[in-house]
Amino acid sequence: MSDTAVHLGSGKVRELYALDDDRLLLVASDRISTFDVVLPTEIPDKGRVLTGLSAFWFAQTRDVVPNHLLGLRPDGRSTECRRLEMLPIECVVRGYLSGSGYKEYVKTGAVCGSRLPAGLRESDRLPEPIFTPSTKAVSGHDENISFARVVEMVGKETAEAARTYEAGIAVATRAGNHHARGELGNALDSLTARGEAR
Image (cartoon, rainbow, N blue to C red; front, side, top):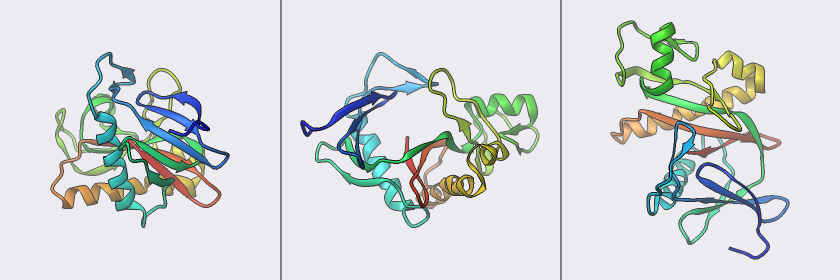
């Protein structure tokens, strides 16, 4: 890493550095985060795997929505990115009913405002993937919100751009992958929404 990189902060699994006024360096660690808690045991090379998955999805979806990725570093865990303004939402797509989505379904019959068929059990495959956004909590747990709430928070055009992550699920399904849940943190530049795969 360059001596000119300035450490800006630590996330649950990534370290963030400023390279200059326009570029950031995101370094994926081997830390594990589950239900918004960082666990004490790391998984060797998890950061490299996470970075490889992110690079794959950025390549697969760049024609749907441009992204912030400028390049991958030789260490396999670092990405050089454009500096953007983060949105206050997480874009989650679910292919299966699990976690907080299942809890919400049991209470209301819906997840993030999307009505689902009666009688679904935990971890059942959904008829089709659904967009289930949440808040992006600085501390504590993210909270599920409806698409209407996303529109209130960021505007209709930005909300629709953020929702494009569903296109990635189609790519995964064609490749034979069963996608339980995927998450995308979005950011804006002056033209479009861009994302960071988790």
